[in-house]
Image 1: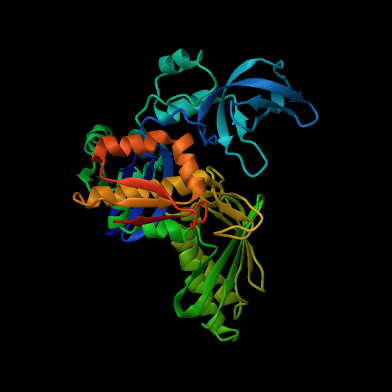
Image 2 (image 1 turned 180 degrees about the vertical axis):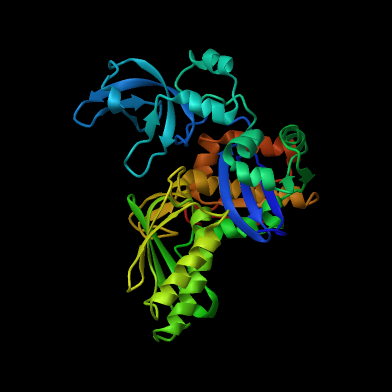
Length: 409
């Protein structure tokens, strides 16, 4: 990757702090954190987050205990080789080893000091926070710094030539943590194409050159990817299939990274022309994944099925943005959560206010978003007014789907 410019983008919005790692002109990864002032809002446990929890129940048959983290799902703490089960009701400081997935709660560890060492939080500060109610420790850290220091991978930050932030105060804070060049841009996600890539990364099917396509299906236990030649090979086999497979192999690691995929991954490539083509496919996957996505390649069968595993260290983008639904979008059986839809709506309005100082944008929202903003997150509109003045309106429209929005002048 020598000679390719690396950037970290940080947008501090009124509804969310989000970050992206951009390699050259390609967005590689996303992170999401609360907006400044919303750090205490409920959110799913993330890897290395530290909680003061309470033992809800002990299960000797499962070899662990269920820990109340203060949310809607308990975490699971394996007892391990010690065989010592804590008493029900006991308070424990725990660290999240693996985030929740579907109906399964987060997997926990009592080795919480490892998380503090990784985050660089002083021991006495953690001790002082022990008496607090169940909530993530370390939330005294500013949201922008949390996105930059705690969320982005060390390798990305150490090698980034530039960090682009949309907020002057946040830029000053980031500068205290970074030796990299820090610049200010009103809407860095739009400027560097990350906003469009984020939306595309939630689509079930993406196109490759020549009409080929990749289709992603995520279940609780695994992710399955189908490589379809479409019109690229016109149903032919052999070397034309090899060409499509190579194009897919070059695209997949970045797609996995952006989508936050982890655990078991099965890719159904097209049948190849032979052993040399399968070897070339494996080498292409290895090359494309370096510095982009950590994965272990398993067996590639003669008919093109490749078994891959990757660390599961975060919620996938699909899990973060969507929930179960009978007839959903962007993928069958799932729909965008109200929180995600409302944040996208407020983000679009904020972008218009920031980039058009004389504009008077009007955010038109469905009934679901309107009720959510009015009853659950009124602080977002208040923050917009404090930053940009009263030159915007938010109005419901019963003709829109309840989780849809539109922006007009």
